[in-house]
Amino acid sequence: MYDVIILGGGPAGYLAAERLGHHGKKVLIIEKSFLGGTCLNVGCIPTKTLLNSAKLYSHVLEGDQFGIHCDKVSYDWKAIQAWKTEVVEKLHSGISGMLEKYKVTVKEGRAELIAPPGGRDGARVRISNTKDEVQEAEGRTVLISTGSVPTMPPIPGSAGNEKLVDSTAILSVQEVPTALTVIGGGVIGVEFASLFSALGSKVTVIEMLDEILPFMDREQAPLMRRAMKTVNFKLGCRVEQIDGGRVFYRDKAGEAQHVDADLILMAAGRQPELQGWGAERLGLDLTRQGIAVDDRMRTNLSGIWAAGDVTGKSLLAHSAYRMGEVAVTDILAYLDRLEGKQPTVPTDRMRYDAVPWAVYGIPEAAGVGLTEQEAEQRGLAVKKGSLPMRISGRFLAENGFAAPGSCKVIVSNSNDRILGVHAIGSYASEFIWGSAVLIEQELRIQDVREIIFPHPTVSEIIRDVVWTM
Ligand SMILES: Cc1cc2nc3c(=O)[nH]c(=O)nc-3n(C[C@H](O)[C@H](O)[C@H](O)COP(=O)(O)OP(=O)(O)OC[C@H]3O[C@@H](n4cnc5c(N)ncnc54)[C@H](O)[C@@H]3O)c2cc1C
Image (cartoon, rainbow, N blue to C red):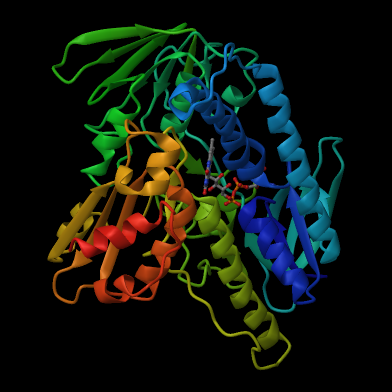
């Protein structure tokens, strides 16, 4: 019998498997398509690889201002795609290697939880592969990490429409579209809009809300939108119908409008994968977002944990990693107790207050903690400081005078604690974790003023902003 059976080999599942293996547990991980999940195969990694090529291309086009003259600049979409595949494959072998190192058993196939663990019996899981072979496995505990899938709203004209793709299919289009319409101005929509507009597509983003990137600070989001100069944003517009490459929508004033493209990307969000593995039958508590879990990632059923996108708590790979790790500590304690031992690993708890996010668009943006509006909603009196990125020597040197960028810091009025940091501009995604530390450690303005930041770096902007407050 396995100590733990893991359903789904994405970031939550494979990292949990590695950690459990590290603790000497007998682990089985079952994956129906590719290890690495959405993140490695059709999410974070392929998109960032493609975006890097697009960023490089745009930067070279602006080379004159940095004294670099390129007479003929072009890109080769097939070569860009090949590089993406190479990166994914390399990281793939890394995950397989780590699972092997920790003696984790990997089985390919669709997992279905037949019976939860109970009494002396373990949980029973059925594994069916594409060759119609079926086998069963038994485990003392189960971790569900089946992730999420793209949401495809039933808009008339979308079924069977070959010009309509989701975030997975668009990754392997044969050609860069001449015109692309993106339905949805969230992270995925904005990243693909950046990618294809940098490569020369005429991009239109249709967003139902009044602003893109709804989780972003309301002063920063318009800056981000305006910074994406070549993308045409249609805000407050509701898509009503699709016909081939034509999207019909109603604008803010209630007028019927349409836009034509040779490709349409549906980027209307993602939903937890609750189908096909027995969720309906087991009596698991579900919320509208996904599987209900507590801060130790326990479900309502003893011996079953859930982590990652399937919980709907925070649909980010780094949140999935952390949820997996938190689940592991609780599973280890549970297994110790099963064996009549005192738990040896300290209990860990999942916290969501300082989860950084990043949008790897052109420009990129990142943030952590409260926006000004969230602070107000919580009834917190706050003060704010902000500065344009170009006051940073490194930022100016590398991006030029016209490059958009800004950093905003939110601080509690009552005790000067840092509550949120929000940045637009290059490297934002790389330095935002440091701001997560400021928030997690409850540091105050004075503490940040005493930290020495390396110079010249873009991250120094945070210290500069704090000195204005
Ligand atoms: C285009 C795109 C870009 C993204 N970019 C970023 C980014 O830059 N940064 C970031 O933090 N996040 C990003 N994300 C989100 C990130 O990919 C997810 O948050 C992350 O992959 C969630 O990890 P997970 O382990 O919960 O689930 P997943 O990665 O979805 O993995 C779940 C796995 O379970 C498998 N599975 C499902 N059901 C079964 C079953 N019954 N039996 C066996 N296996 C099963 C699936 O095949 C899948 O491999 C992006 C997502 C997309 C779509």
